[in-house]
Length: 373
Picture 1 (tube, rainbow, N blue to C red):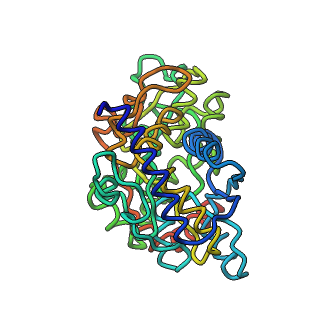
Picture 2 (tube, rainbow, N blue to C red):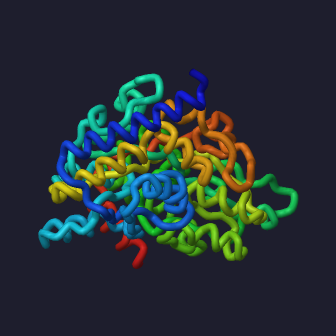
């Protein structure tokens, strides 16, 4: 059987198995509320698997809610009120761990619920170490990294290429954009204050280490514009309001390749992270059945590879990687734009999900107090 026929056969089996699995859990609802992040990423989800799924399931509708950044707080409030209106929520891995630990997300059997790879490999083996929680269904590997204006690099100076160039205001003057939260910023600050990569989280779990990170950030604080939405830094770069700024690599890809702005990518110390689905705990039977049917389809090998046609995030399944092809509209090869490409991944920083699940609330409070000073 050739590759195309094999994938078509696998898709048919996936859909049939998903329907059978869901049918065993009661009648399926005819609508879903999906929660994500908006922008280019949500669009890639819509194109790669929501639209195909709805086309195969006449009479079913899907509504988006762009509240993923506030998913933990909102699910806590919904649970307390006894009224969970979301059916499927896209979250970063550390938030999935928190929601799972608090009983707000449903634990799942990945091999029972998700489709195997085309060669029969179980889903748990295909996703491998990216299953960081019993409640987490991985979708993509992405990174937070820096973009910079190529036309604002000072004369006679090489373009910024190292993470500590962000803290070098003398060589690279100009405004920076950093996210209005401690995650990533604290790690980069400690790296550029001389802490070894494998000791960053040991240092950061202490009050002294947190103060040290904030002191390093103090050295550039007056030149920082703080962002909250993923679209902010790309817009600030496009408008020339900043020299460099952090954001998700897929957002920078859009600015550079789709919008053709004079922006360069700096991959050094990019922070790898995972994004994926959680299913809220205790959904009514009909809504749960629909979500299970959808998720089995939306996370199969072909669908995750298809998502990479629209955004430069690496698919979470090992079996999807060889199927990543060209951009749906630009026709350019997508593999070299992935954070996982060997040329881009020479010096990565692996985000510690469990650390931030444990320390997020305390360090958040300290960071916000520092911001207000």
